[in-house]
Structure formats: C-alpha cells, structure tokens
Length: 443
Image (tube, rainbow, N blue to C red; front, top):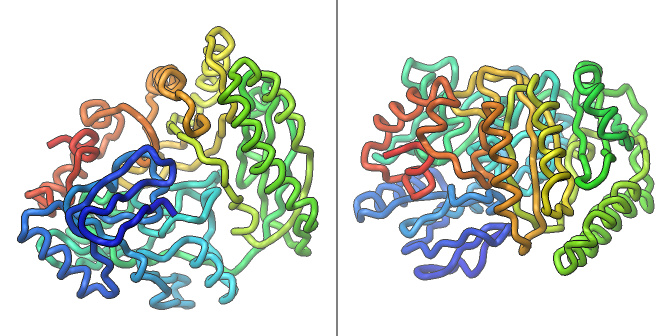
C-alpha cells in the first residue's frame, strides 16, 4: 500500500503513485498513544523532523521526511461507540475500509465517503479527502472530536465544545496537513445504517452541463465523469432508499467494476501511452462501454469502488457556480491543443463547511479532477488545467498535484492566517515541517 521496504534506518518510502519517495533517518511504529508521544518527543530532542504516513495515497510530498517517519499501522481499531451521541472514536491508523466494515456490523454508517477506502482515517481527513454531496461534506466535516499529540508531547483532546484553545485547534486540525501535530484518534458522527440507490447513466456533455444545477438540486450525491476528446459523460446519482437491497449481480458487478473499469481500462491506457494518436478513438470506445444500471446497497458499497489503474491526479475546488464555465473552458482547451488525455475528468460537489483550510471552507463547492495514466507526461495538461481553475478562484486539493504556494493560498483562504498563527503556537520549531509545508504554508 504505497510503502517499499520500510524496515528501519535508510529504507525508502514511496507513495501509491510512485512519484514521491523519502529516506527517513528513523522509522517508528507506535502501538499506543504513550509510545507515540515518546517517539515525537525523542525525535524533537534529537533535532529530527516528524511526519506520519498512512497508505501513501497523496500525490504530494505532504508526508515525506528525512527525519522520523511514523507508521500508524498499529494504532488501529475502534475505541468506543457512543449510541446516545451517535459517534464512534477510532484510532488514527485505522483504514477506512476497516472502519466501514466495523460500523456496518454495528448497524451504523458514516454519512458520506470518498470514492476509495484504502486510506487511513487520519491520512484521509488531514488532506481533505471528500466524496460528493449536496448537503453532506467531506470526511473531515463529519469529525466531532480529535486527539492530537503536539511537538512538546502534550495530548490535546479537541472538540467544538472545549476550551477556546481546543475549539481553535479543532477548527484547524480536522484538515491539518500534519502541520499541527500527530493525530492519535478521531471521533466521527455516525448514523443508523441506511441504503442508497445508485443510478448510473450515460449523458452527453452538453446535457450534463446545461442541467448541472438541476441535477445537483435533485440528488443527494451527484458525480459525473467526462471523457476528453468526446462529448460523452457517465453520471452517477446516489440517493437514500427504503430498499430492498438489490446489489449488482455477481457477474455484472465484476464486468463493470473490475473488467471494464480496471482491466480493460488498464489495457486502453497502456496502449494510449505508447500510441498517443490512438487516445481519442480509445476514448470514444471507452465512453460508450459503460452502460446504464441501477442498484441498491449499504453506503460504503455504493460510494466506493476499486481503483487499480495507477495515475497522477490534480483536483481543484471552485465555487459551485463556476463549475460549468471552468469545465467548458477545460474542454475547449483540450479541443484546440495537441494534448491526448486517456483518463476521464471527474466532477463532484460539497456544501460549504467551517473547517479552516477545507477546500469547501465558507463556500458551496464543485471539484474538478484531472488525471493522467502513471508514467505518461502530465505536466503540460495539469499546467493548462491549473491555469483555468485558478482563474476561477480555485483551491487545490492538499493531497494532489499542484504548484500553488503560500502567497496564493493566503488569498484563496480567508482564514489562512488563523491556521498559520495556530501553527506558530503549537509548533514554533517546525518539528512537523517539511518542504511541502514550507511551500504551501510559508516559513
């Protein structure tokens, strides 16, 4: 899961996409909060920077370090379920897939999820991982409390009901980029298990963009994929259902989710990487291969899908009202350029939230994600896409490729100074710093 040979000093860590690597001086695998505190304090005393890695699903170097690399794979499991408050407290290294399965056994569920569940809960929330939702936001927006180990070894329990300092930390640390400390536990809001009906349907690009506002208003969870070099999209609309459970058939589910979406897609991308001129024709075939289907199941089986074809990704959050204009500009740019793009463009939404550095902080948001098959040149495409997104006041996903720096981000986030001031108080010596954080947060 994105790690290579992390056995001790000098071992190399690599992320899932393979574009980021690090050789930490020291590796720690704490099995308790006390052991985590000892590791952090010991590293700070020895002058080592400290970063925590999850499963390596970020495309940026947000978790890279040449100091102490903390692997949280022993900090896993559910600490407590509070059915009166409808919350679950979970250790920070718990993979989302294990949390989802454990909650399902208890008849509970998160309200919203991203489209994969390989990440750890702390890694996913720290970088702002999100799904799509008209009324429900990112995974971090579902946090009701967290436990944070600071550079001086304090263990802060934070929530919106705590002291002034605890409320300030809670507001920021839900998406903290690993800059404020190491999260040791997270308390999420949960709700009784429910069912979702997914309706997947091909639509034309012109129809989706013309009807975007109506589709968003009419569906609890809307997302769609546009296939570059075509006028075709695949839409997915998830809405709550009274049931009954009606999952995809074993063969049809395998055919759509594994054979077409992973197996055939892998082959198509491999061919396209060798013969770029064939990409538009491949895109036309790919965009017509997926057919309409409807199914009903518990949330994590509807929200999430296997993603086995590796890629590079850039994603920008723009004001929702700017989404259609930005997407049309992206399409026009590709039509007049020599670029050949074999991956679909993904569009999702989120309501405004109150998290300091959330990409949806203070505004209703649409996410536009561009991808390129791993190993193929991506910079020209991403640069052109980034130029369009920043012209629409875009905010880059913290865990995906971008070139923005602190000067840009201070303008993009009204509460940016609030975050950096808190960082100055909690980590004045930058124990949790690295090159990526210097770029995006400043000195």
